[in-house]
Length: 247
Image (tube, rainbow, N blue to C red; front, side, top):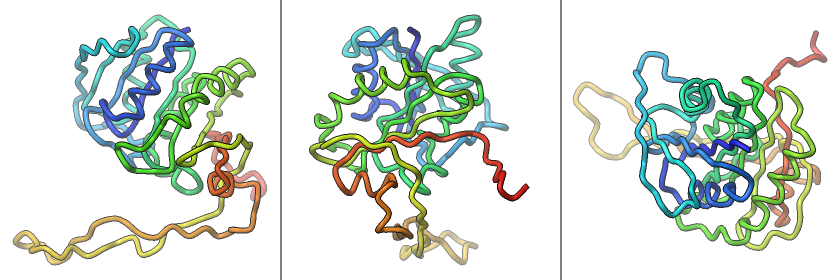
């Protein structure tokens, strides 16, 4: 099986290195990742910027091949499909492990999930993995046993066309798994004014941040509830955004 591993945190982070190693237990792994952080890029593509590809020698990945690009996670899927696998089949795309939750509204912004959605649009089964911590040294050993088992199960059961899976893990011991829906939530107070001196001619500046607000904290079928109760959350997503009830 030909597996493409991608992420949005950039090559070399603990999450993608662990994911690449684990996926070699299921097939031949080709890693193609951005050369630096691309968080929050969703399914953005490099329309006006030329893209480049560079191989990386890494002998600690159980035979996985590694490439980095100056493009986005979505670009990675396009490069893999049309260049690295030209004339060949990609059986599965696995994205992550993202450092930071992609549950609820976060999935809309996520480059990790953006890559999965592009794969789904191309007819390639795709699964995104995230953990609820931005710490670069977050403890991943609780999640590790689930990576191969869950990925293999979802792949063998069949991933519906134009669909991908968004998997979010809590930090610490994982006590089980649950099928979930996206929690209704939003971010507030997202702009923090810059306190340092602004460049000449610039009157305002901000850093992006904010507070996450769960709009349905009592709901027990959401991705946020699952993670809050030390459960692995598995949410199917589709690239069809049509609200059919409004037609």
